[in-house]
Amino acid sequence: MLKPFKIAVFGEAMLDVYQLVETLGVSQEEKTCPKYNILQENWYAGGAANVAVQLAKLDTQVMFCGNVTTKIGKILSENNIWFDIEEPFERFVRTRIVDNISKKHLVRIDKNPKVCPSEIQRLPEEEYDLDAIIVADYNHGEISTKTFASIRVYQSRHPKTKVYINSKNSFVSFIKGIHIFCCNNKEYQQLKFIPDADYVIITNGAGGAQMAGRKQNEYLSLNSTKDKAVDVTGAGDVFLSTFVIAELNGANPYEALKIANNSAGLKVTKTGTEGINKEEFEKIIADS
Image (cartoon, rainbow, N blue to C red; front, side):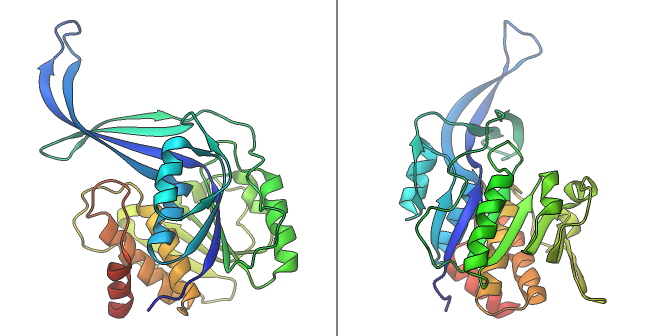
């Protein structure tokens, strides 16, 4: 049985829109432009908001520290996730047009405005007894050095709180006090310096994941699972969320890596950013 934990999540709240369509041929006005009819539209939490939702599905009390828009706020509220301020307009939107029959992704349209660092990207002034802090940063401008300064102040008062970071931002190389730093292989190649973390995890999609620790010979490489991938969207969010929960529940980092790898493998068999539920996760733990 999973233990209840309190976790704060920082990062951009994205809206993932899935439009299931039927193909109607080619537009008469634009002879090379395909024409689609939307049959169904689904909204999912994306980015850091998806990390928060996955944590909540695993009986975690989640505090979301970031800008939340109306549609994302509705999803967070449905999952009993705390957030501070709701804005009326969607900021970060990723729209995917998906063939209704084959489920193939036909087009992806991103709305990624550069924004100023959010004043909400910090912990509230009140003291919260957090088990972990997660930063899921997509480098769109909301996370700044002030965010990490806020986390460092909290760590000085709560040294047992572990910090997990998945960031595309180059300045993360200079941040201290990181327990787990996670990124994909492309992002890792772009780092100026290796982050000062207890463990560094590099994910590589179908190539699996690798993790190295501070000590010599602390290394583990895993292949991806053999599950047939239907939709890889949100797999990284599930990987990070389940790694954190597995470790907080007593798994060592290497056991947590296996659990997270298998959890992400199960997620890619599902459409949308929807992750895994508590029962599926507990079965993965039992089988790992």
